[in-house]
Length: 364
Image 1 (cartoon, rainbow, N blue to C red):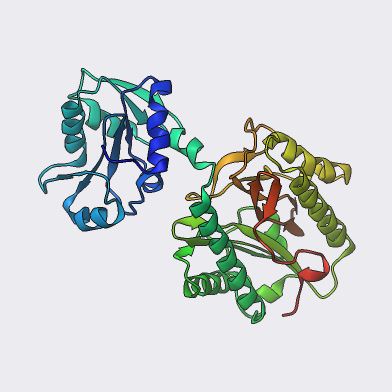
Image 2 (tube, rainbow, N blue to C red; image 1 turned 60 degrees about the vertical axis):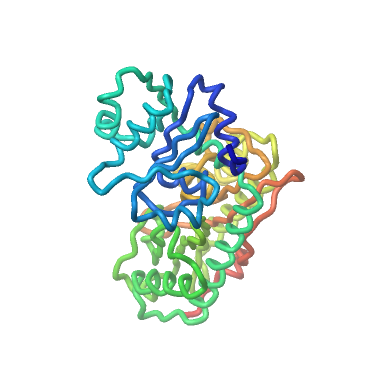
């Protein structure tokens, strides 16, 4: 068998520990991660004897280009993917097969397994996602570019902001700018929240004009070659109120304190506690309504999670967001977010947009 790509080899090496003969990968994002194929309607059947791609005729050329070292089994136009998968499993003589229980629906599982009573199915959860937590050099390079594109797009927007634009206008223009810089699009729907709307952490941009509020929260990211960036900055117009000024300085201190705590071996929950402690000491603990951050990669939200309930330990190669925030209903919200790479020596903040209070004054 030809030498497997490193990511596939890592999964193959884990099969014995899972007590399975083969792993059926049905999550399209995990398929992409493991072998580089960017299409859909395709599975990977991974075992120590062989790894095959199960797909259809639409993708023969694309598979040959993106996965030249992996054999592909192509279904006929009259054959559905579950039937093709059943044949491949029977041909391989597998007895214990792992499935992605956190992805495969109950209906999909029944369609796939009904005629294969001789196979014992083993539920796995997050097996590939756990592997994806540690980024390789290629992934880190791509993520750096996703961050750069997001930052350049915001700089272009900030120079041309118009108080008559609505939140939706800015969201659309920001996406267009990121696409013009090489992004596939947004890594998630941007949050553009003027004034009191900023107090809603997952607000959806509406028709409020940018000039209608004295503050504005902007949470955005670029998707580049499949990988996400995720940034947030909060701005004010004219002179900030005393309440805004104090809250902003607390959130910034909380973020910087958390970043200082990030290193290999640190507990994710301890990093969350470092930020939360600053905000609680300032008497704003109840206004911090979410976890500190999360991993980013092919998904916008990946492992590890940074929260009080996190069980993960940070490792070099992880890329995480650090995004403390406070939210005051009817007034404003403040969140400051950067993407941070955990390195052998500690960490590197990948994003570089200024975030001091004086840097956050908007001229509209």
